[in-house]
Amino acid sequence: MSVQVTESVQASEFIRLTPRPGAAGQWIADDLLTRRSFKLGAQEAAVLVLAGRPRERRLLAEEAAAELGVPPERAEAVVATMEKVGLLVDDAYLDTPRYQWGRELFRRWEEKGWRMAAEYHLAAHDFPGVDYSKGISVDRERIHRYRDEEIDGDRFKEPASAERIPLPALSPDLAPMPVGTDAGRTRQLDRPGLLTIAALALGIVETTRSRAPGSADYLTRTSPSGGRRHPTEGYLAVLDVDGVEPGWYHVHGGLHALVKLPLPAPDPDSEEFRRVFRASTTRPAFDVRCLLVLTSVFRRNMWRYREPRTYRSIHMDAGHIASTVTQLAEGFGIPAFPAYGDLESGVERMIGVDGLAEGLIATVALG
Image (cartoon, rainbow, N blue to C red; front, side, top):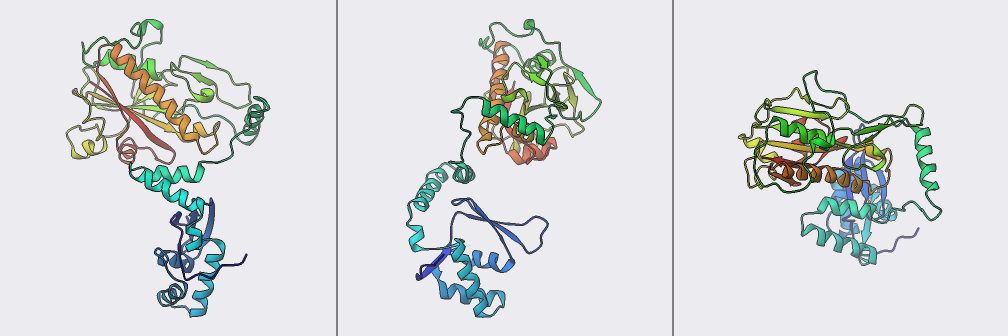
């Protein structure tokens, strides 16, 4: 591939440089626009940083030689190689339709504070989807292939402790009828109300045996879930609920109980708690007595949905449950407020989960 000689070059603004895990002095350069990844040594990574703004190719090589302490010929060769593979780009490349499209995408999304979402959209927006023109058989074939690769056995988390509060047995009589009817704020959240809402929103209505060897049962809740694997988990920050000790609880569907987490009780008056739950504690127009934190276990969802747009099904899954909780609470006359602006990393740290494996999706405040 020949390289057009131009006066200036620069690093593409769509490249993200990160250290290579477990490899000292090595880096990964991901080009979101072209969806290519490069393994770089320390010299190449340094040149990429130096090329953060446009400059003449000759001057870039001279500065790289001085910074790295290498002969000019070596620096010139590194710059030339990086330009050849597309890590460094020239003025003509900046004017291509795709580069201009990416720039405009970033500009519009950044105006709304969506920089990270823009990067994901850029990397995944035209990922080839599944061709269903031949019917649902293509989906069955994929599922059978997945089963051959790994057992579909993840449905419930291990209980964090032996301290539990049983949930009421599920029955139609538990729900306010009709569900969703706003009864007005006639009562505040208490133990029976909290346990009933948790049971109806996150309890398991029925199970269906999987025919695949080793696979876990399929689950049914009052809210739907793709593949009936239910990646959404619920955690309760009990602040001031009559009859329930303040603390953190996991709504465990398999045990049909609240499992007390071995964590410090949440302090709603602390600066850290208010900072982390910045949306769910400040926006409701009522005294918040409990927070329901909804997370997603990503691996559980990704077993079935392995495409880049899987995050959509995760949000739909948690959104159904958030809506169910809100409607149940309103039917009981308990104020509720779903919030999506809490600090993800802070919440995940507070409840003791790894955000890369299980992340915050939404919070529902109950009063």
